[in-house]
Image 1: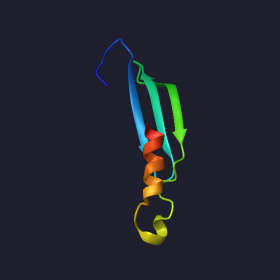
Image 2 (image 1 turned 135 degrees about the vertical axis):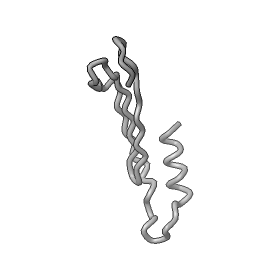
Image 3 (image 1 turned 90 degrees about the vertical axis):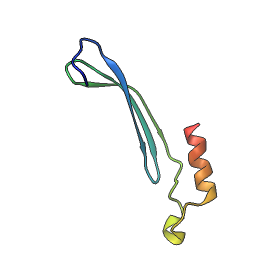
Image 4 (image 1 turned 180 degrees about the vertical axis):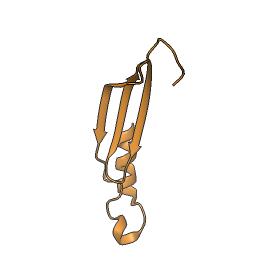
Length: 68
């Protein structure tokens, strides 16, 4: 983060096999992150993948729905 007296909002998205997480935080000039919003969804994207090695259409649709 560039040196500044102003805070900025930053976001991180973690798209895992079973859970998706969103963090929106304020990055302060003293290099701290202050969470402003945390959201979690559990679309189970990897469901059935161990048997087929592929993502199933139902799981993909659940994942897309959780992102909307």
